[in-house]
Image (cartoon, one colour):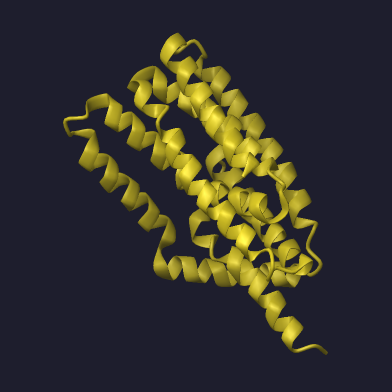
Length: 231
């Protein structure tokens, strides 16, 4: 859970600096940092994809996962849940504190990188993705806390619990996940990261990346099925 601890600390640090120094960082500087993160994420995603031993397995995982995600409208459901929670609490008696806590919690927890990074951290101990997410969340916490106050800092608790759950779940799966299954899961995650970079960071094209999340389970299952029916 090292990556989750780093992520939690980054949110606390960014939120604390945001409440103290306000909008010291110019919008143009923020945009430049996000673009830099997007380019780095693309490069990292390619290296993850190259870990695949069979690109067709990754393709099958992405396509089948995407179809499942579209059928269940995973991305839309996540977005609607966040909107419902925010609309319910932002006008309540909690004021900016509750709004800051809720808005930042939804932002930091509902992206594919949170789940993928936590799983990778739990399975292999590689927390690179969560370090990248930590930088992004730190700057986001800075910006949110400058307007919504200290409620943003308390979203770090939600990140700790949410990502910690997926990391601990992945640890339990270590006994059944073979190196081949982990390799294809990692490669599939690389494809999702490319979509995330293009859509959310570089803002080149809108992609419903959340709908591809089932692919993280499909690709290892394909590896398992192939192993059960050897040539």
